[in-house]
Image 1: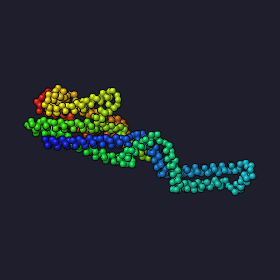
Image 2: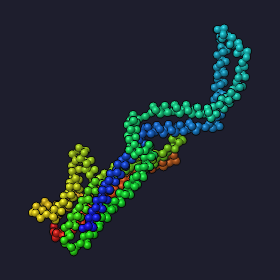
Image 3: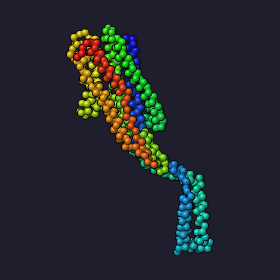
Image 4: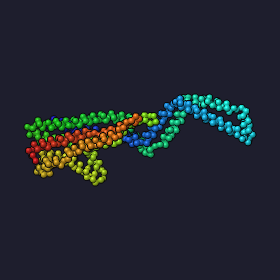
Length: 419
């Protein structure tokens, strides 16, 4: 009995960590799905505003006129200067009524040669262009352009940006990071470690169950050990059931893995944009259905509660009572029924198949739908991925179902009841 005691402690220890790590993984992935949600990324007005401002600012900072553009601009300056000279000439040489105006007109005709001014225009425009193309002048122009651009950016925003920023800041504070890049790095490394440890503990539980089942082979000729070993086997089954019911069984995760394109000549990239994420255990599903408040959902929740939780638990308790109880009520019809006949009402095995089929269905649907989002051209690339996956909680629950079938056969063998 010492061996099975150690196996029980091992299963309980591993089960506790599977449950704990499952809850921790779920919380981290929910936070990750919020931070990387398409609502805060591709579909965010604030995100696009920041990208536009950054792209235009970068173009302004690296603004360079080609030789052809310089020639075109200089011609425009020439035209402007020539137009100014013509305008000044027409104003001064026009009719003048005041003495000052007549004196200015006389001085202009005496000292200013309009044709000479026009001949000097190319030299003036050349000096203006030289001054304009100086690094300091370009810096001043870039500063003015960026200031105006930032002002326009401040006038373009989503009305919910304060709530959006507050929500993201609270998540960043929770993980002690300052931005999305640091958050993704920390959570990515943490999730890899959690997943590795969670599977290790899950397989530790299943290994303990296999060893307990093997013990029955070695004690098959020792009837005195049947009852205590079976009671301990029931406790093992209860541990499996509890962990299987409360740990995450399936995750549905659809995301755009990468979206690359060119925005006014600047490379823009969105990564890991989460479209939809849900992580549920059987208990979570029951709780969710009951909380909807709809009668049909509540009915389904109650059915799952009865067939996948209540019946398995009562069956295990009834087998223990049947073996240990010596009073008449321990052999009563309800106890006997749950111990020997309630298996057909326990839908745990059906639930295993249903969850697996749901996984296959969701996986196939998401693969098909996400495939439509894959697109590649010279300037635009979209890669959509489906991260839907079964979780260790499912393995533990499958282990319980198979182990329960073995215990049912063992009970019939040790009691001689083949009903």
